[in-house]
Length: 468
Ligand SMILES: *Cc1c(COP(=O)(O)O)cnc(C)c1O
Image 1 (cartoon, protein in one colour):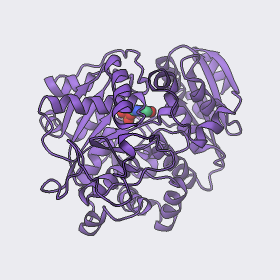
Image 2 (spheres, protein in one colour):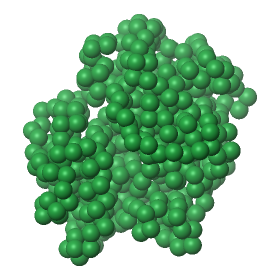
Image 3 (cartoon, rainbow, N blue to C red):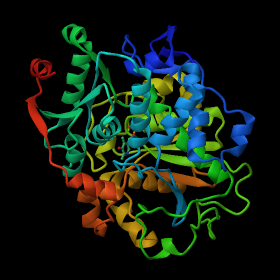
Image 4 (cartoon, helix red, strand yellow):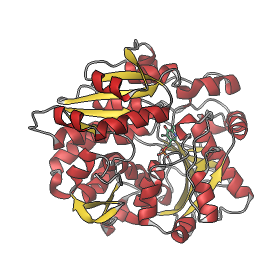
């Protein structure tokens, strides 16, 4: 597979070049020359294949012979000791993407990326330094993914005092090949410093630099996997038993509807109905910020996964819902909300979506909706009350967005699933006052024990350059 920049279709590079560079030299994003297709055999078995097998069949279409089959199998196997359970909650389906070590969906991309980088750089003598700017979740996932990977050093830049205590421990608690810089400034300052470092000729002479934010194709592609997996399961009428980390407590939700492999007894408004829709294709609601997750979903759909439509749910940072409604794209500065991983006013993956789809096509496939903090809080409380299920603020935006579109008669067919992008215990500052403490998964409890080792720097490139 060849990849070209969204800003220049004439110069194509291979997967390794696109992945290791992150951003194209002209500032564009790498996109595959064409979105590949699942074979008929794979397409018809998505509902019964293991997660690892779907990952292998999906990713190999993008990496071709650059990663030998046996290596790819190993990468996938070691990256995903956890899965993405599809569970039935109240009247709909929830895809839990928070069973990885940092309890947010970014583990799926970061863990694959780390292992792939280690393979692609085998035999290299010069160490690679990865710079990553984070508003909270990305830094932890990248740090965890690359921890103890030989030959690769990671520097995470985060806004001092603006990440949660748990996020800070995930970012700055590991040590070894992971270092953390607390920047006296905002996330935008962190991002600016990283961009300046990547473009600095002096630094480039001294070290091999790369970045690991969500514009990297090697983070995007593995995210298509869980879309194919959930769509396959839903069209086969299967849900999973709730896993260990599922924050399910008493009440309606534990009434036995979700035993492994069985269809829910009562499909509700949005659930799987016996017999299902004509083709069983699912509609999926994606809580969105930078739109990497949704872009991966669009890839899975184009590859042939049985997905009917997407809902792009944002908080008040609704640049993309506004674009879908009007056809006019206007980036803006982000506003702070309680779903802070989605506080993005200029979503970087929009450039990638626009490279593949016209406005007319996009609005046929994607329904946009935006949700306020007040609505988000109310939803967390209501869903707990009615279904005994803890939602984190990001997933609650998805839940409420689905309700709003349903009320407007914009969602026609079942099944409908909401992507739960983070574990509720990860955002306990918001969740706990509303519904009490959600059970804490072991990985988060371990992270809370760590000590923070970070260096504070001003938002000044000269200082960063010195530190590096
Ligand atoms: C990063 C993140 C999002 C937003 O995902 P994008 O791919 O940037 O749209 C949503 N929820 C959580 C919990 C996240 O960490």
